[in-house]
Image 1 (cartoon, rainbow, N blue to C red):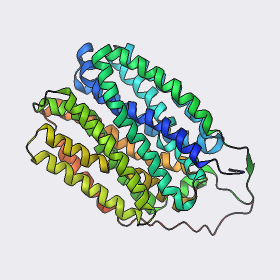
Image 2 (image 1 turned 180 degrees about the horizontal axis):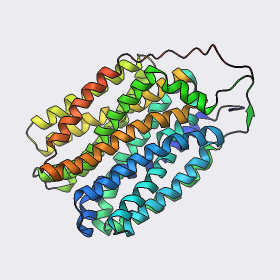
Image 3 (image 1 turned 135 degrees about the vertical axis):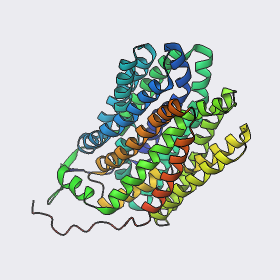
Image 4 (image 1 turned 30 degrees about the vertical axis):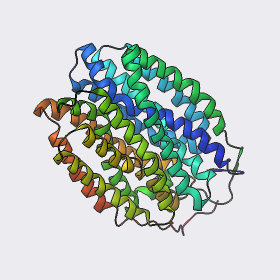
Length: 405
């Protein structure tokens, strides 16, 4: 393994990764807005579009560890460049392909690859290297806030584009925006030349074996599965759920998703700040428990635009606040040499949960005519994740059996 001669500038890294995450996550969070227009235009059931989004999330997770390996070894810039062009291709694919199987496979694989190369896992390593240990949780919180700002900023833009230029042209415009902004920002992530570090350095296989044999790492993996299930189900299916329940104004759903992004700016930043002062495992446990409570209150309260906005604000505070805490634990326990790869492995679990959440949402709706069962599963999983995170050990590993170089 190679280590950089000096850490990259934190301010530059946070600005560049902030723009990249704003676009990557902002565009992705708006895909729920396309479910009904795409399905209606092509004569598909909701399950077809849901399956495409599910595969997209699964491929994001599958490609994540490999994108992290490349970022750790050869630099984040190259990975983000690949992601930018894959994102462009995937959005264009969504606009032009009308055959269901090709739509599911193409958009799922291309955008899944794009997100693996431009979202949290791929950029976590350079953020960790740029930040000092005492500021690392804060820096991860800033990156989480940037992705939430993208959701807040782009949700109304995407909704407006669909209404004004049509859903296909909206996808073309977003494809252009992604490339024109992500590519210049990727060059801001160029790191100094690398040199061989003294002593034995963990191989990828050794780092992976150490992680998967660690109980705390496996508990983080389990918790992230629940995180993905809850978030992607809500993000993709909430607009359709509200319409089914009689909230016919599409601006309510768009505003709700934007509010999730707005309030998660504060939630992610606060989680990053608190993660530097309090045990991160307790904060993670609280977040998962609070999500289940908020979902239950939303389901039992009378449904109105006001209740939707309250739900969105509360979920927003909890939305991606798990990211700085989880990444902070990984960096603190295992170090930075394989940070992006290990973050990608944990995120793979998140995306398996995302796959099941978005797909089951469509499948169970088509089977039962409602989302009630999936909401119930989300509540139960949140309670399990709250319990699973309590015994996580945040202490750095002491490696006593390193081989000689």
